[in-house]
Image (tube, rainbow, N blue to C red; front, side):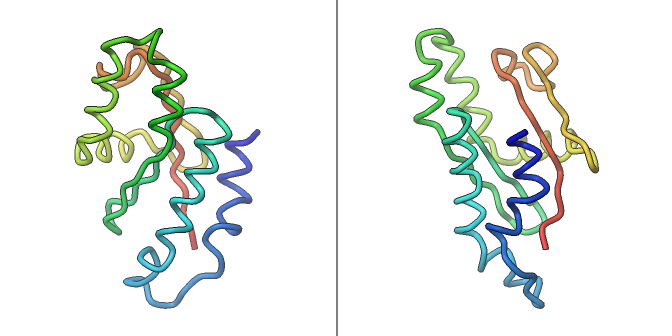
Length: 130
C-alpha cells in the first residue's frame, strides 16, 4: 500500500509542478527527491534509493536503519550490500534493467540478479515524475 502511494500520489507532494526547463528540473528538485526516499526509508526501516541515470541522480537513505535492523542476522553479508550501493554504475544499471512500466518488480533472496543482495529483498518501480 505504501509503495503504491509513493508511486501514484506522493510524487506530486515532493516534486511539485512541472518546470519547463528539463536541465534544471532535477537539480532544482534534488532535495525533494531525497526527502521522498528518506520518508520511505523511515517508514520501512530499511534502505531506500532513487536513480535517474539520464539526470545524473543517484542517492540513497537508510543505511543506519539497515545496519541497526540487520547487523546481527546478516553479519559480513552487510558489506556486500554496502559495496553494491557504493557501485553506482552497476547498481543503477541493475535498477534500470529491473524497472518495468506500470509495475513493481520484487526480487527476494536468491532471485536477486546481484549475488551480493541474496540476503535482501529488492523492490524496483520505474516512474515518470513531472
